Length: 424
Image (cartoon, rainbow, N blue to C red):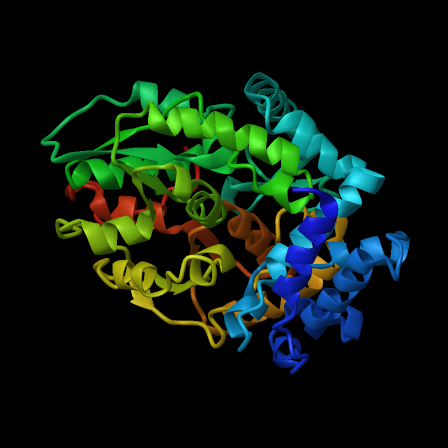
């Protein structure tokens, strides 16, 4: 398909927009800035003008197109069903072809994340040097940089152990009865940054008689590349992963990262014979769970990742699982579908705006009085932890799998109540 035909198809996708303004009332970016060109309908108008050749991709336009989280809040509420996220991604692709991908995004999406050896080396190096970079905060789960870091600024960073999920998998003995086998698409964050989440996924699945395969050859799902407008790198990663998924010998794929899950379902599913489920969806809808034996005496709230609630239509399953945990007191947030403001590389290129959006979400989470903020996306976890730290809150951010794994443990007199692990 040539560019003219591609443009015509994209313009047809925009035509149902009747400029009703419903998107303005829900868009987190418009809520923070109040500028029409930052509203979803404003972006649709800008992209159409770009495709029709009435405006050029200058710096101002590129900035506006970058100021979208791809959170799908507008898509969820649009009465005409306009996929603004797809339209924005298509615009970024055209801009990238003409202007190139910005250097900071290119470092992550083209140089670092697609190359497993490079990524492993980088994470190992940071783990060894992190003591020089910053001091521990939040009970050892994160570090606060002493100075601005080129890509991440002065935001809290995860306290790395130097281990990967693959290392932890190799150390785990296979025990107990097995009724089925699934493949775990762990994603970059869980594999290399938060392997304890992956370990928790394995523990919960194994307790419920599910064997979990974690192929070392899996690479980034490609969403950061796709969101940056780098379609070629995304397609390279997609093809690599498709080969790994097909060779897994499993009929089911599970994910514990909302962004990975939504990407697999939308961009991989049509080429795969197996089912793809979020961790909470798999446990709640497709397994008969054993009772959780161990008490977790905490008050908790739940943050819905946009790529779970809006992209995958999963909102009840995580809550129903939390309500199964003995001793856990659950308090829902006022606006549960509010975006946290992370948006992957959005939080780097639009740092101040990302924090403004995050502050509003964090304020509501704090108002619940919860000791523990539970979510299902490692990216949301990192951004929420930063927001809570800025607000002076002592609330912890944990993954749903970590809570369930803590409650899965066998009760002994010495242990008493379950404790949520924050480190591997």
